[in-house]
Length: 227
Length: 142
Image (cartoon, rainbow over all chains, first blue to last red; front, side, top):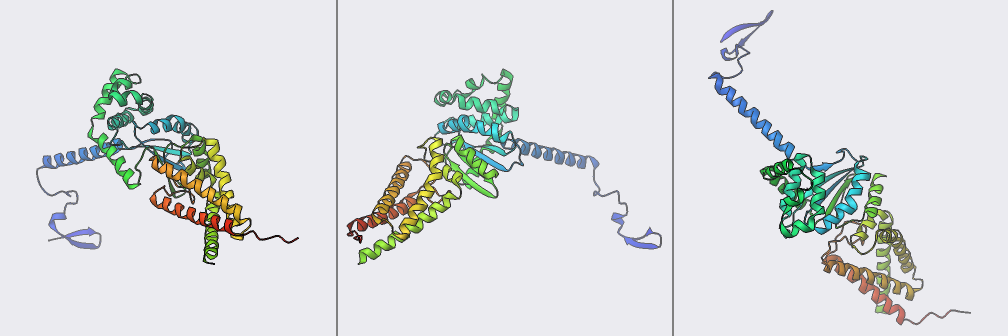
């Protein structure tokens, strides 16, 4: 043990190991620690990137007074009706004005053979920045690809060849399926077992609305929540 | 004697149910409209109109049941309304549509339990209807 003068008039004893404050790492080959640090940095980056990719498909301001989650299945006819007859107007009149934050959740039903693949493409489209176009195309051509499973042929009308190829690659990313699995788990937790279902949260309350809701009815309800 | 006592009991119970249901729905017609819309039977304008009118009808029926005015016609109206509700709920359930009952506001799905409950209320209403029509009319003094 060495006696070290720490300050004028003050002395203290410090163990030899911590005598040099700059050496905070145990002794060893420097390159090993550089490799460890690099691995740590890369892992952190990967986790952050995965978390970013795992962000839900959503539109609007996250600080909006009302949050509306839509659990849907791209092969569900009712979901198509809700999408075109109701949700579009909700987006135009409530989401774009900052009143509603709309989150899209995937709930592909087991009896719909191609629904999960369609959901994969929608999630991949979100990463490509083409979610709205693909979302509209999937519902718009639902009857066609529901029968023959040729989803990509329908998406070719809204995507360039390069975009379509990128979409196919992204759709094969395991994190896409992980995101869909997370939505399905969320549906179970919220006791959502049919599509479409809206889960509306506002003023500390949660309202679960199953089935196709007519826009004028939903509009009055949203207005009552905004009062 | 027993029938009359039971009829009175059922009438008052139905009054409480109707008043509670009507007041709950009248407080939030927009929410009640969502429940009606879930049955997928009516266009939007009819859903909205019914959501505003029906709760007050229930409140009026509840009051009339409570005071016992015009027992025959009120019990007929009560049975008719409950019969209509029960029929629509049963058909919706059999169609596999997962709709909200809308019986006491929002948040209760149609299920065998709600059907049994409303069926029970309907039977009570029929009993009140039957006993009220069986009773001789109280003669009015001139």
